[in-house]
Length: 174
Image (tube, rainbow, N blue to C red):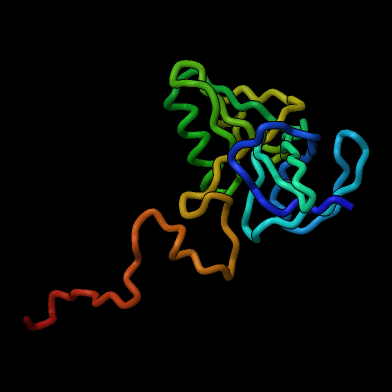
């Protein structure tokens, strides 16, 4: 069985493709089936999120390209960029993974289908359309692949965090 274990940036040739929905593109250990029908073992570094077009090199040197599977999603559109921003805020406030797409004039959000979120978004004035589409949510602000409890985040932060930070209080003497 082919074992895919190394993410690479470029390849001269691609031998096969692996179609996975988002939930499986987050898993670091799994068995999967290539488009050709060959079964593979997938081993990536914990916290890795595979994106559309990523390349994985196998133990025999073959390269497999990741394809984001179409899955049930909602496309969220609004009349104004401000309204779309409000929807994004409320989704973020609920820790909902969301894909941000388009431009300022014709931007949209994509989320997984959830009837409660659909009702909330429609209440905010959004148009919510069910679509089968590849789901490519934004990665977390502190990591390339999202948030994983228990991991040491210091090396992935956007800014350094001091190990010990003295908190200044007005009552402290100088």
